[in-house]
Length: 333
Image 1 (cartoon, rainbow, N blue to C red):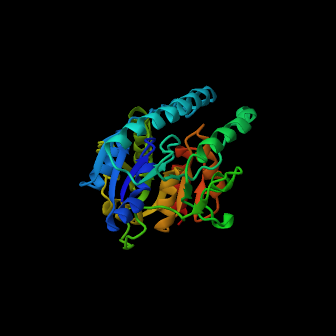
Image 2: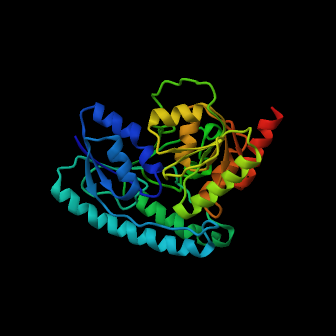
Image 3: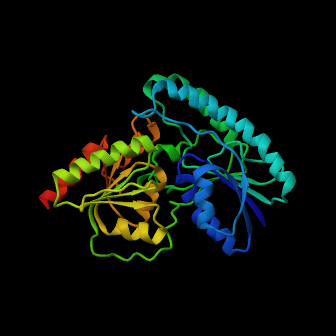
């Protein structure tokens, strides 16, 4: 079969969680074509070097220094509607060039066809809104239901049992969708990796990704604590080339899977942004972590709150608080 796949290009999470699916499809002798753009497609091309890539543009949403503001939601809603309509027109051009048997969309609501079986991967059957926007909840649910029903099947990377769930209400709000829904469990590129537990490399490891100018603020914060606690080793996994003169502060730039896994398993305390794909990775490798949400990003705020005290996760409201909590736990032990 010729299978066309497209991840939403909003961070790397939608791309990384497709790895086990793409890997399985290739193992079963299917031809996989990936449509997309930006960082996610570059990452997938590096991961699957022989895979065919089709340029498929998407919008880039930028949030402010303090996270997503209330006014940003109106801009975002307009962008999503326009992008969905654009995607559905654009995919018709791809289908003219390729003989496609199946379409798989990861959170791209317009990436479907009325004539070819189309599957949607999403952990968001429900959207969490700020309290001031709850008046729009019914309208948004109507919009989601309309586009969910354009697909032939929806696959949810979570557990069907709410008590075991990683996404909580996000993935369990059925919204009266008249489309078959299947819970497939967490998706992680580490699901088939052998877990080798090393001697500890670092005391505190940070898993945070943000636009470059905000990353410098994070680096300065880490530098401050590394100077304050020279006997604690700090590290951060980052896509950017940062450098430190301090012996107890290390930056690991764009590690391969094996290096990422060894670094995370070989760190005593993990601090991570509450992105769902990273949560699935940490759950898969059975690694506890302190979760921090991007302020104003209601999905992450909900996930951090929902998982607080579950599956070995703890949540706090800021990176500063997370570092201080990790330091306190390290000192006490």
